[in-house]
Length: 446
Image (cartoon, rainbow, N blue to C red):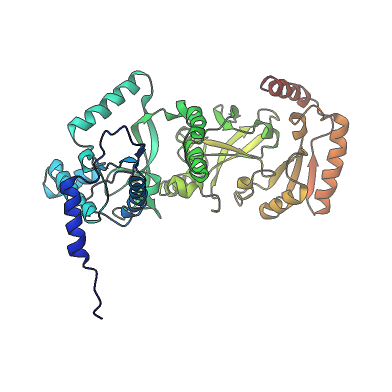
């Protein structure tokens, strides 16, 4: 028996032509059917045409829409092209072609390739973001946001491709280079327009409960929104300047053992005359500029940094000096400055080998056990441990008598592990007034 081969060239081109001529996937205004709206991310029409990353989500959504049509739904599945972009302008300048012509040619190529793949898009609703009849509305939306204070200009560090001469999203930086052209990506301060999406953070979180997303996607959205509740705490420095720190855990302030600021922090420039090892700091800033926020925020990476010799911060509650470091794990987009308590934060356990050998430990029952703290200390290898009065902000059960019992218990266990211990618990003194202020604040915020 002769084997019949599937002649995909003839069969698929025949039906793709039929679908195109008969507008098979056109969405009618038919209110008798249930509605289903499917949307994919519109591609940027580069000169290279489609890559494998495009068909993957398009195919998945195409399967869903075909099933919905067979179930009787009136399906709207549009397509469009997010066509503005500096790469097109750079290409046009290099080859002496108007960018509008380049964009038109690229869109025609993308359209041909997408139709060749047989997707069920409604091509009557195709969008081109470079079309004046489209972008006049995006401009109108921007104007409304600007009038209401939701659009503003700010100087921020961005991922800058040294070849494309444009800003890249974190996802477009792969191993320190541009995923499009392979050129080096650096961090660069640029003035740019920002949209104040933070004004809607709580609304976005609340309304996630009203959408039919799988829980994994909801978690990703919550992480992207990134809303947190905390306080700003001001630290004085030994040269008269103030450093403001945002924290979600003000109760850990008494155990602060060092502070870290972002390599892009504007104070560094003004501090240059006071920093004795400025060359090392500048070299570290240059190194950090080559990393994306994703790389810098990776929890599993070894934390690096440089101590700012000549600059110290002052703990606002203990009035003791704190060493100050610059490290790339602190981002300007979130926090800008970090005060650390190695007893409790895994992040602080790994920030080591920076020339500071003392560790402050707070004694609150709700925090990790001594064995877990000892594991962190083994990695940090301090010369001395200081026990501090954390408990005074932990609740009104923390009394002087309990402090003494707590101190003896913790001190004995740390000394048994081979550490030198200095205690600051007996006789709370000046901390008692601070304790009452904290408790009053906690009670009022309930």
